[in-house]
Length: 133
Image 1 (cartoon, rainbow, N blue to C red):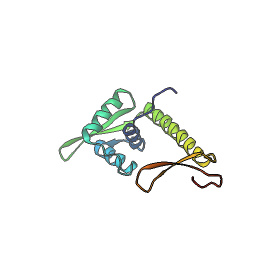
Image 2: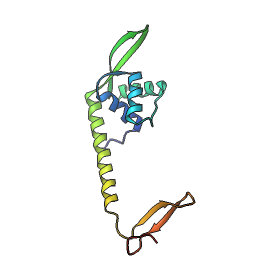
Image 3: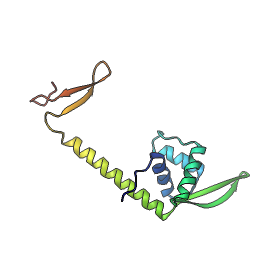
Image 4: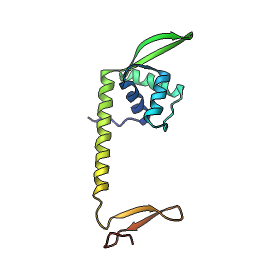
């Protein structure tokens, strides 16, 4: 698949909707929870993203209801949206797997980057006994 990679907020919005239809506030809370509080969407950002995702056919309006005199619109993931989310999750899994494999088998004598006592990043070379020189 030659699709370009997804921006993180898009990935998280689609992930939130993968569990079932939700209204905007529910999506905002789910994204915050899924990202361990790192990504906090504002309502305007979310609704702009949902409009774009709707126009791309990845999400659709599911239903509307009135709660406390306010209209609440629910969104759901479409079949195409689920397919794109699955493809992106697989792409990320392969990348994470490659990174983990490379970290497990670093070559002897390879360069290591560590924090120096002064707080910067320093380059060290492994010595013959596996220590750093």
